[in-house]
Image (cartoon, rainbow, N blue to C red; front, top):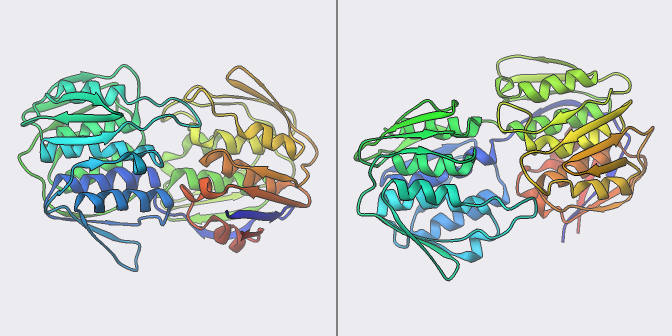
Length: 417
């Protein structure tokens, strides 16, 4: 099993290119199921979750080819098996995103329930409620969701809670439904907007993405398209937090500053100097950072996927910070591992109280989930001595060649078995 070995204490410096966003790419890949024509997706990150999704689509009968410019062509001319088996769904919850497209295109789907998750329950009830409103008949048998519909019909759907994948699933299903569907209390995340833009490039009629009310006028068919997935805002934020925490100076290219306001504001509040242009962000940190309070919430508020990284940053900042998690109920598992590095953190309910210390010391730590992995890498970059991060397969789900990118920024980091 791979692990990362990090010799900390080196400020990051230089330039790096940010990869395409995993959380945008996965639903866009599923959109290929909505048309028999080719969908070419560019700027696709080479990640474990992307590979899993491609394997799932291939198993259904989608023809997949790749080029050398991070592009993937998908042709779902014939969907031989509208089934998402447990063996794949259990390794990646985003597999549930095939449910809406399969019902809309094939009139049936058999998708495994995703099961539990290390960071929280993340139920799919809003997906099912919305699909039933669109006319699907759904039953749960032997751990699988069985859905059928001769043809979906439009509906006015008000979701009980904000759900990104739920919004995406219903948006894709409604794209081929009869009539005009309205989604209220829709997720506003940029990844939802990216999917809507891709669907529109395929001939869909989606309006309002990025607001809490999305309107989808159903069409009889979608056509092929070529679409570039957006930059990964969480990778962007992670690298900026790492540069700030190590007292570094970096410039990131191929990014979207316009969707990172909450993170950039907190970095500035911590004392980092941040400038940006249309597709670049530069950060410079001189001296100790100031502790910053963070409260996660759905976009456009501070993202839950950046919470762990800011816990690591605050662990060596001046003062005490309160980091409050409101999205997932079990997302402080990185705290105990950061404490092994010498961090002073106590969890009280859904809030971590982080008291900055003068320095961290290297130690062996174990990743428990994707973003926790990133916080431990940050801790290792900050700490004196050697830090070993085990179970980095979590990291490989969401960060493309992170050790190579960090090495190019001056970090002393390498992968070992």
